[in-house]
Image (cartoon, rainbow, N blue to C red):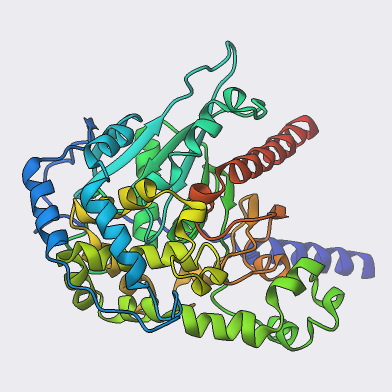
Length: 465
């Protein structure tokens, strides 16, 4: 009798636990409409159209007129980049832009990779799609979605693309060869901006998910930094069975638990207790200087873009010099905070003026600065850490390339609170926020090794079955 009661209770407990087991949540796939007016009753045209960047003499003449009429304010003596973009150097940039920069030549550079547009949820979505030029017989390319951020563009990926699609020709291992898809976030570059309020990172992730399915990719890898970090994270939350692996070169946590707050106070003295490595301690402490003060000093742009984007954006959309100063200041400081101590912001230590101005032109020519900065209001305006995706863990295999000059460092022990399946976390030897633009070889190699780990784990699971 006691045995029967015990077995009944045991069986009942097992059934209860099975039925009450919390299901692994995913973000719901949204079917939004972000085009003008009401959504039409007819089905959306899913055709993928070839696209080329084009320019006109009228556009160039208008730009030259505005550059010629620029007004400059003299900087404070010995201020370097500590007050923002130094106008002594800005004069040099504007002079180069007006007299030496060849936009028509850069248009040819932009068009060297196949570009397309397709209509998704009422918006013309622009993307670059590059297939491997020398795929060995019997091999298949791995689809890789790469997403940019602000104030970047798809042009950030132009140097890393050949390292991924044709690694053998660039001295890299060809164990993994990629087919790369780089979309412009709606409202950036040549992707149409939303005509409705509320278009945020989850909305962009849904559109990019539909784009990958439309291109025939039901399993793919996703990679990103800046807004690309969040969009790709959301994509992994929406479609964990389709995203084979998530690779990030920036990770940010939107809420801190008690142990993480405690680690800020004690992690410098007891690093092992909080899972910190020596490099974490080096990058994080003293925390007032390398954490709080950095956030206060470098986040002013985010506050105004998250509150009054149109006010700021209208001015930048009207002045090419203002636009260049605003964008390029980030390419200085976010590449290396020490560059604030240099009169030229160190910009030409890591980039060429041709590359920097090409990225600026991808905001000026389509006139997209207002819609680009609105993305901050849509994502931050409702509060940091308050949305469903903020609280939802990521279970997709994740790799992190942690660059030393990222404005704010996130240790692995913090990242694991959200990304619970980190299989690769590497401290990179150099580089900052714009990893693909600044250190394409380092980032490409890290993507390669991460994908190798994912593929091996998948192979082991298949053998285990």
